[in-house]
Amino acid sequence: MNTETLPPASRPAGEELHTVGEVAALASVTVRTLHHYDRIGLLVPSRRAENGYRLYGYADLERLRQILLLRELGFRLDAIEEMMDAAAYDRRRALIAQRELLRERQRRTNRIIAGVDRALAAMEEERPMETTTMFEGLEDFDHEQYEEEARERWGRTDAYRESMRRTRRYTGDDWARIKAEAEDVMARLAALLEEGAHAASRAARELAEEHRCHIDRWFYPCSHVMHAGLADMYVADPRFTEHFEKRGEGLAAFFREAILANAARRRNAP
Image (cartoon, rainbow, N blue to C red; front, side, top):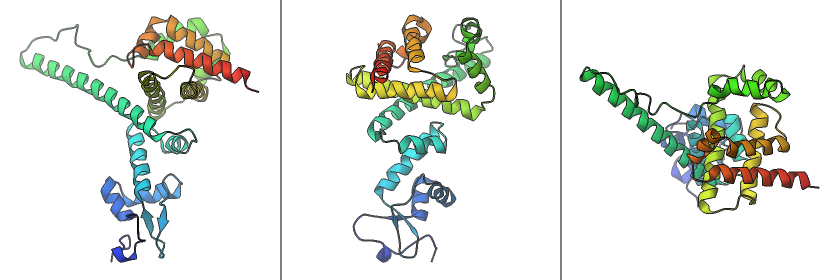
C-alpha cells in the first residue's frame, strides 16, 4: 500500500477527508510542496490519522486554493501567510479583489496578443505597423518615468533618499510582490466603491492604512500626515487620478477621503 494512501475504513466518520497524495493530485502540486506548507505553518492539515498520516478537510482545500491563487498573483509565501492569518482577512472580499486583478491581467494580456497579431499581419503583408497602435497593450503607469520629477521635487528629503536606498537592492521578484500588493489594495477599494460603501467606513479606512503600511514597508517611513499629503496629490495630479480611475470612476477621490478619514481617526485615537 502507498504510504500516503489510507483505505476508506481508516478515515474518521463525517467530513470527507483526503490524504496528502489525494490533495496533491486534486491541486496539481507535489506532495513535497504540501509537506513544506505544513512544515512552515502555511497549510497545516486539520486532522491526523492514528498512524500520523496527514488528513485534509474541505476548509484545508479552500485554504490551499487561496494560497495557490495568491502565488499566481505574485505573492511570496511569507506575505500570503501574514495576509491570510490577519484578523481582518475577509475571504469573500479577498476573492473579489483577486478576481479583479485577474481580469485586469486578462485585459492587458488580450491587448498584448492583439498587438502581436497586428505585428504578424504587418509582416505577412510586408508593410510597416501603424505607429499610433504599435505600442497598445504595452503601456502602463510607470513610476520610473516620473523619477526625474520626483528627484527635483523631493530629492533633498529624507523620504526620497530612503526610498532610493531601499529600492536599489530590490529584485524582480520584489517588484512583482510590490505591484501585486498595491493592486490588491486598489482592487478591494474599487470593490468597496462599487458596493456603495462610505469612504470613512471602517473597511475603507483599513485599506487606507494597509496602503500606508505598504509604502512604509517598501519605500520610506510614511506617517499619517505624509499619507494625507499623498492623498491630496492623488486628486491634484491628473496622472495619478487617471491611474486610479482606470479601476473605477471616482476612485481617486474615494481613496483620498478614506486616507484622510484614517489619518484623522489615528490622530484622535487615545
